[in-house]
Length: 447
Image (cartoon, rainbow, N blue to C red; front, side, top):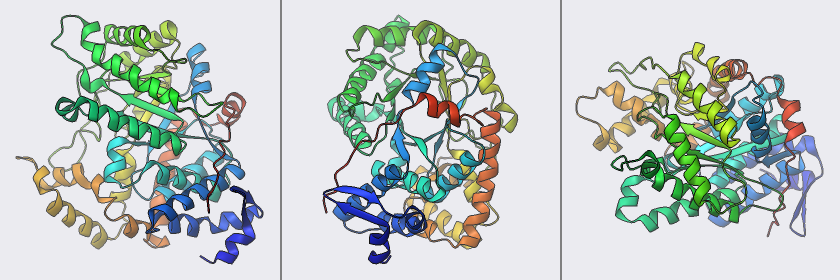
């Protein structure tokens, strides 16, 4: 990209970014973000990401916490469920598609998120992720709060059992990195530590609520002035047994007993019968999952009435049948996490060249052969591992021509439209802007 074009649109003086020509910078964003993502120097790449984030804030797309909206939901459920969308590949393009649909339908209540595991296998550190999302907001002319979330910032049990301190410190490091990248929404998942050998539900949940409290206090210690980060907790490891009111009370009572911070949790993730990515059949198709909506209804009402939380969070839902999504607002679910369904649209699109898809699948069969379980068909293996095909081929995905990417984005936009409709977030822009007052956190750019 020509430096001259950039300096005509943007000025950086005394560490502060000023946008001189808004239309020009919008048109330069495709080149700017590509250049930043694939910059070879770590230091230069970081500066480029920071500049893009500052441009976005100057243009009115401001990273924000959803805390105020969730506090309002805790007082009175407004009848919609907030979609939290994980983007594993083509992040800038997919975020643009989301912003386009959000602008068209006046949607303000939606979240971009990335999980601890996804940060690894998609090769997207928090700063890159937030820069891509905010670059997309600039490109599409979206203004207002932009909610970016750390999903499943999880204590991995096998690592914890080997070295508890090292594992907790790893998650703390990830929290700090994410907040510095302006993730003002963090979901802490220590449900992996629940000890079912204990006699009482409270004692079973003790390691969960104690480590959630410790990590939540750590989050609060890094909050920028004027921002209360929205923190989520979790009681049922996704893919396990369904959660109960006794577990919810034990966890939330225990958290309240030991937590030394100011504001507590804003929501609670529970298990209702889903599994991340869905259950894959031998032919590679997804089995129909029977989700326990009564659990969602009972627990959402409980955590709202008794603890002032926004409600419960449903994970692993993107592969559910379309008719299921109407039920989340009906049951008072405050947030729903969606990932694999979008990945499936990308990989299964007729617009994606067969040779490109085959190249990635051959790579997966070679590099992840050790993950091929006994009795698993090739279709099942590919389905369960193809999420790992985004990171190693990031530049190849990004460089696909427009005639390939555009039809895929159109397919995704149809899905976003359906989800926004069924989750009842269309028309929430005005409410969100009324309740959420984003704070611009100034970042000095050292050139």
